[in-house]
Image (cartoon, rainbow, N blue to C red; front, side):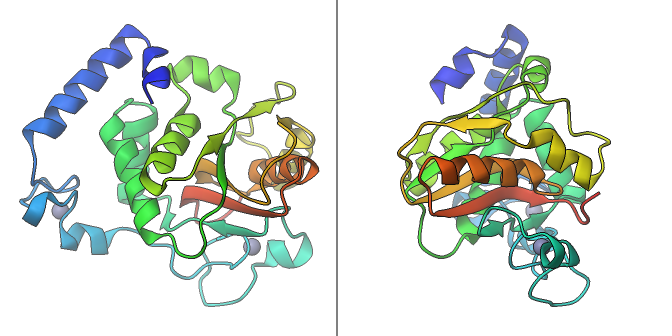
Length: 241
Ligand SMILES: [Zn+2]
Ligand SMILES: [Zn+2]
């Protein structure tokens, strides 16, 4: 974590210090409503329950669905390269604000909360390694830090699972505004990971939209030896565009 922090700019470091002082100064307060919480819990029960939980979703890609179904229409037509996606929260309201505080406001407390919400709702066998989705270099420069590496390190710390790095093979244009098919073509063969990966790995990103980036990274992981690949996103957009 320190290595990422040391790479941040001065303004980011100042924000970090302010955020840390707020965190230290407000123990026992809910991160969402600032109300009192028992035993220094990070949130109150009412705010936790009110979060946009992604409970009715595609079992393969975690796309939120209107009613229970095994697979969404996209996965029926073209299954992603990862085996299963885990995205406990929908990207809306409170989670959208939290993510923006983390990514654009560089508030570590928001990042810790996102990772904690994910880690506490995760079930099943833990993977042998976590791999951050490499951030687009332009986005990393704009924000002053690599948000997906930061989240991966925090999850690694909380879950006790080691993390490995992946790289962008080439600078793909940003995914913003592209159709689902264009996104898939855009990221095809875009990533490289070190060979000899463990059999079971999880890829980590903050928000998952169509899953095309995670799917392309899953392809690279399979070529590097992984057999079971999970896609972990802290939040999932309501509908892939
Ligand atoms: Zn609250
Ligand atoms: Zn699906």
